[in-house]
Length: 309
Ligand SMILES: Nc1ncnc2c1ncn2[C@@H]1O[C@H](COP(=O)(O)OP(=O)(O)OP(=O)(O)O)[C@@H](O)[C@H]1O
Ligand SMILES: [Mg+2]
Image (spheres, rainbow, N blue to C red):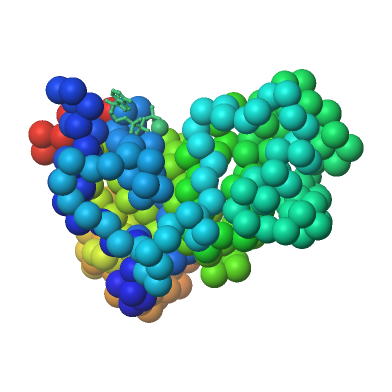
C-alpha cells in the first residue's frame, strides 16, 4: 500500500454471547472510498461500531492517524433509522452541528449547506416522521457530514432507496470522496461498491477474506483478454485456430458472423493483429478481461471452508 493507512486495526475480537462477530480481524484502511463487503451477519456493522468507539472489542486495538479524539473527525450514518422523528431535517442537522461544537450561526449555515448538498429542498422544514425512506437516508448523510469530518462511516447508505435515489447517493459519496476523506461504506451490493470504491475488503464470520485496491482486486495477472472478431465462418474458424495455437483459450463463443473469445497468456496484441490480418477477420473488441466484484465474491465464497453465500 503506497499511503500510510488512515485506520489500522489489529486482531479485533468482538463476541456477543456465543457469537463471534469479529474474529481477530486485522486490517489497514487507506484514505479514499473503501468498501466493506460481506453477507448478512458478516460483522460489517460491528467493525464500524468498533472503529467509532461504540463497541469495545474484547481484544485487539486500532488507531486512527493523527488523532486521539475520534469524535471530531468522524461522521456516522447508521444502518437503522436513528433520526428524531419529531424534528424537521433542518433542526436535526443544525443541532448535530451544535453538538459537534459549532457556534449557532455556523451550525445554521452549515445545516443549510449540507441539506442543499444532499438534495433536500423545502422538505427540510417538515418533520422527519413524514419522510420517505430515501429522504431519511439523505438526512442521515447530511447529519454525518455537517461538521466536515475527515472520516465517514456509512453503513448501507443506499438501503431502501429506489434506483434514482441510489444513483444520487452513490454520486454524493463519490463527491465527498474527492475531498481527501476516508469513507468506509458497508454494503452487500457488489455493483454499487464497484462503482464508487477505490479499495475494498471482504469479510465473513468476522474474518477478513480478501482486501486490496479495487483495480488490483479486479485485474487478472495472467494476461487474460476478451476479444470479439467478425467475419465469414471460414475466416472466423481460421482465426480461432491461429490464436488457439498461440494462447490458451479460456472460452469461445460463436454467433452469426461473430466470435467472442477469452484468451490467456497474452502479452501485447501484435500476434493477434497479425492473425486477424492473415485470416481476414475484423477485430471489434480487444481488452483485458477484468473481473467483477461478483466474480471475486464467487471465488472467495466457493473455495476453502468459508461456507456458502
Ligand atoms: N447487539 C448484538 N447482540 C447479539 N448479537 C449481535 C449484536 N450485534 C450483532 N450481533 C451478531 O454479530 C454478528 C455480526 O453482526 P453485524 O451486525 O456486524 O453484521 P453485518 O455484516 O452488519 O450484517 P448485515 O448485512 O445484516 O447488516 C451477527 O451474527 C449478529 O447476529
Ligand atoms: Mg450491518
